[in-house]
Image 1 (tube, rainbow, N blue to C red):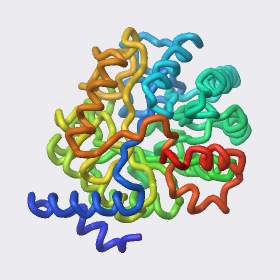
Image 2: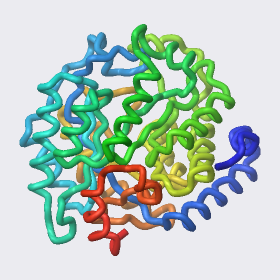
Image 3: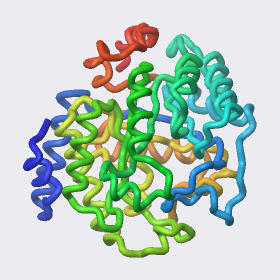
Length: 370
């Protein structure tokens, strides 16, 4: 772990030559720990129905200008077929938050069918599955794990309790979210979290706290990106946030800081980076990220899943996204690890604290491709 002083020094870098050196250091660290390959998580945004009312989110419960949807089971399975055919190796199933029994039943059923439908000689247990469907009970998490999901991303958005309260409605609890992360780890999930970078009133000390939180909570995956306002939300209307260039640069410095602080975790280069700069996702890869999430949500509903304004790729087909990302990764000089789950080595270095032994065989079987 980097010292707090070292983290703050990274987050305070301002000169172009310092940024270039930081990129080089993060790249060397990634190469030494995990290699240079980039792993895919085909992203299916299967429902925008949400029970929460977070002050920054375009699909918040009270948003009145969007059409709510849940994809039919066959639509999701067809998207999974596309991902398997393209050699993506893994999926991320994402939706608004709902802890209802019906929502959990639907997710568990889909997971089981995807696993069965996408099993092949290259991936004997089917596509790897990451879930991003919010806070659930421990019993529900266990059901989803037993159905076949083995990764879970639950972002906290800020580890500062006061900041968390400012960007969430009354009644939402940072501690409740942390308790969910700990339940996920206890069950055996490879566990991920993340934060928004460049929130109104956020300091570099807050961001250093976030890096220390990731280390302290021993997470395996990090999915973080710049705060991008949605004009239809209370936080988007507030307007008092750093310039886009500042938020982009802070995001790149955070990716590098996490890579250097926790070298063996998976870090996503998020689509939000591309919303601030046409080459944003390539920049993320150059600062130490090793995961990309090509969108495979059917085109007719993509515009109804805008968490922030200016989301890229809304009019692109899954085939367009596939071809685009091949070009983007190639421009960085790195290669794509096709037909691989691409699980974070951090999880396996610490697996004595996990209970998910049934997944180890799948990892061992594909280790030659990772």
